[in-house]
Image (cartoon, rainbow, N blue to C red; front, top):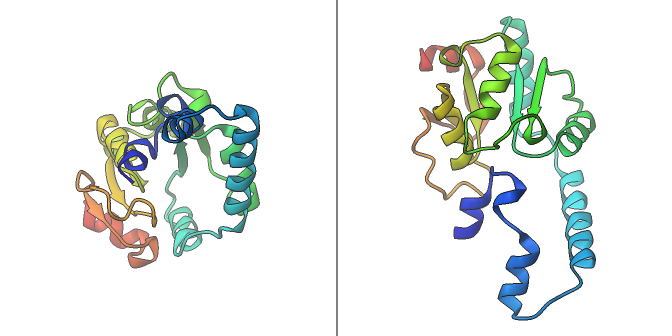
Length: 181
């Protein structure tokens, strides 16, 4: 969990899961086979996931309020776009991924790119994040940030966020905006 806490929310250049496995086992493995099996299992698990509680309602409310919505992800466009389509959330005004910037989270590049794309000043934007690296990126870009941890990040230190919620269903977008000023 210590390693995962440092890795989550960063780009793939930060951690090589194959090399970590080889080091733990003390011997080489067939890299292609290991990574293919890992990738297949990961995709299988992701395909089972549903939209988190409150997300659809928050997106709909934000649109009713006339807010610009974007996605900033350290994952690839291939991965992000496919899952947004699968979940029926593929109509964001702007999606920026690690493929679009020089440096992924915890660097601010992704959030600055989304704000630029949306025509919104970072000081007028709010990031929803589930990892310490994502929070660091949002704060470095000048955004306010709401931490909404997932089961893998719930025990990590997310205290750099301006607000922490257990779920996006815990607060309406209007109440969130009021609370963050």
